[in-house]
Every structure is written in C-alpha cells, then in structure tokens.
Image (cartoon, helix red, strand yellow):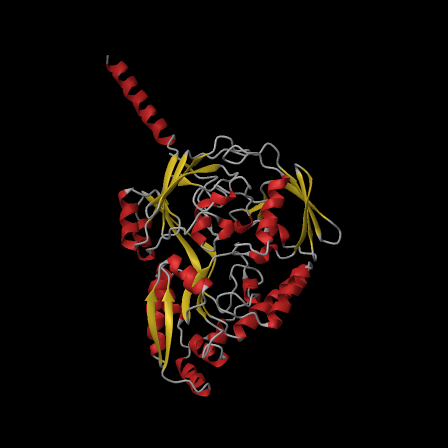
Amino acid sequence: MFHRLTLTAAALALSAGAALSAQDTITLGMVLEPPNLDPTAGAAAAIDEVVYANIFEGLTRFGPDGAVLPALAQSWDVSEDGKTYTFHLHTGVTFHDGTAFDAEDVKFSLDRARAEDSANAQKALFAGIDTVEVIDPATVTVTLKDADGSFPFNMAWGDAVIVAPESVADEATHPVGTGPFKFDEWAQGDHITISRYDGYWGTPAQLSKATFRIISDPTAAFAAMMAGDVDAFPNFPAPETLAQFSTDPRFKVIVGSTEGETILAMNNRQPPLDNVKVREAIAHAINRQEIIDGAMFGYGTPIGTHFAPHNPDYVDLTGLSAYDPEKSKALLAEAGVSDLTLRLALPPPTYARRGGEIIAAELAAVGIKTEITNVEWAQWLEQVFKGHDFDLTIVSHTEPMDINIYARPDYYFGYGKPDFVALMETLTKTTDPAARSDLLKQAQEMIAKDYVNAYLFQLAKTGVANAKIEGLWENSPTQANDLTAVHWVD
C-alpha cells in the first residue's frame, strides 16, 4: 500500500509538472493603447507592438538582432544595376480569413502604400518604387527609380506589411494578416487578445493565446506584475522598481537597447524656434544626465544627434550641445529673445511626463518659461504630429535607422533643409558601404549643428518577465513584441 501511494503521489507530481510545462498562454503589459491596429495607416509604435510579426508579415522582417530576414519572400534577386528586385514568395500561404496570399496581394499593398492618397505614415519608404509587376502567383518584380541597397530593409518595417484587398477596409479594428497569430478581440481601454492561427504557413507559434493589457500607470504596472496578473511587461514603465524585481527569483529583468532616439522636438517652422540660436540655447540649457537619472533612473545613453549609439556609423556629437546654461543665456541675448514662453506638449510615456518636468525646470533656469500640457496619444498624433500645433514636445522615435525623416519638410518638426534632402538622395543611390558610412556621418553632423531638436538619450529597453518565460526580445531593433519564439519552461 505504501509503495502504491508513493507511486501515485509521484505520478501526480509528474502530471502537475507536465501541466505547468504545458502552459501556453501569456498576458503582456503595454503602457500605450494603439489608436488602431493597421500598421499601414498609423504612426503609433503601439500598433506594431501588437501586430508586427504576430498578425502581419511583410516581404522581409527584422530579426531580434536587427538583421533583415526573409518573411513572405523566401528569397530575392537583384539586378546588376541595383534597380530591380525580384521576390520569390512562399506558396500555400493564407490570410486569417482563409483567402489565399499571392503576388497580387504584394502588388496591391505596395501600390496602395505609395499611392498619392496613401495614409501610410512612412510613405517615403515606397517613394523610390517605379513599378510593381506580377510575374506569376509566386513571383513579383519591383523596379526602382534609382538603385537602393536599403530596399529589403525598407520592406521589413511594419508599415510595409502585406494586406489583402478583401479585408483592408477593416484592418484598423479587425486586422487580418498572414502571421502565426490571428486577431480575437479588442476591449478598448483594457486589452487586445490574439490567438494561434492553425493555418499558418510557417513554424507554428508555441503560445495558443496572448493578451495585451493596457496599463499606463507605473504603480499599477508594478502591482500587476507582482500579483501575477501580467506575465511580462516588455517595456516596463517603472524603472525605479527594477532592482526589486532583480532580487526576486520569480522574475527576470531584461535590459537591452532600442532604436528609440528620445528628443525634445522643436517646431522649426515658427518664430522664435526658426532661429538656430534659440534652438541652440535650448539645447545647452538641458542636462542630459539629469534627465536620464531623474526620469529613467539611470537607464539610457546620452545622444547628440538622431542616431543610435549601437550603430557602427554613430558619431558622438554630445559635445556640440553640452550642458552650459551660461552659454544658453548668451545665445538668447544674441538672438534678441527675452521673456520667452513656449508650449510643451507631453504624451503619456514615463520618459515624456517625468522628463518634461525636469526640462521645464532647466529651461526656467535660463529664462524660458513653459506651459505644460499633458496630452493623450491620440491627441498628440492629431495635434502635434499631424497638425504641427506645438512649440516643444518630447517623444522617442523608435523606428529603425530613421534619420531620413529630417529630409521631409512636411514632417512635424519642420526641418527639410535642401542640403540635407540632397544628402539623403545621395545616400539612397549609394551602395558602397564606406561611402554610405561617410554620408551618414555627414547627416548626423548637419542636424546636430543646426540644432534641429535637442537630443536627449537613446531609450533603453527595460522589461520584466516571469522567470519561466523564454523568447522575448532583449533589444528592440524595431517597435515590436514578437511572440513567434516565446514559450514557457519549467
């Protein structure tokens, strides 16, 4: 009897262990709720944080190390002149509504993204396309106006995912892609749920379901993690508590880098911010380390231009805008500016709200008053990003290698200097790595010396997860919570 009881207990223990190891659902925390779920018609990073590589796929994709990998295109050929890309597509692929994917969907998606009335937030990614031609259902040829060695990189962005004409009208609220997860529900203000798509063409996801819970308050985020209501918070909004998590065996802290250049953006279109001396004065009034320590609890790398420090072509230009309040006052006097009051719009992220209070105090110390307005993300997109109705704002640009945004005169901070536009056009046509590196360094120096914005720090990726979860990205080469390799372990 004793031996039978022992064996039964052991069997129960094994059964319990199997049940634990078989856990296949996950709840993730997110600070910001996406304004919609269509990455081809929205600028918010929170869209890609839900759908990139999970629901939607492009011809190519970014891997966790930033490498450009095949996705819906299993391979591609490039013509000798660098202008023609022939993509060979995977076959047997279906969208989540059961419709077949083929080259016609690629043509539809690329033509839609580059159309005159396109709502794509990164329309410049497609500006170099001359024609898109369907060769057969599994082959599509894209001919560019000029050679562009970065085209596979451009196609890896979330803005370049492939959509179908049958479902495109409802992507904002009911996204339909080809990825390993399909959309289930969106309880606005609370959560978004996706589940494994059993008809997926590639390696099936190990998770059966994932729920993204919207928790914007840092205190609530901490409480949710501690209570186990959330299994992982990839971009955790309360870095001051990371030390507490790191000493608790139930959790692991994941600290990496992002593509997020965090900047104090200035509206270059309107006086007095159209005066480079005023912009330089603002830059010298800011103590980067004080912001990193006070708003991010030490997490972040100072930057002096719009470029990631982990990129091999990065130039450290922080010295051009070193903290120097006396120089700031002198520059304002030279510009003939006094009694200056500027509007400072702060979106919800912790870096913006906490950092904004510090920057307001630093600007006050050199004689610049600020009127702070806390805005929700949708309002920021409408008022600041689209409407250009602001003086100053703080935001992290989390798109990969996006210094080319400074070539857009209609972009929200309104730079678009002709010399910079020409520099970017030359870069696009240049394929030699050494020459491209030199051009990128020139670009960094030009915007730093023009003090287009005040460059603060590279956003660190600070995450917390249950210690039994594997496969979450450590770094963020793009704005994503890629769940394709995420799983639970004993």
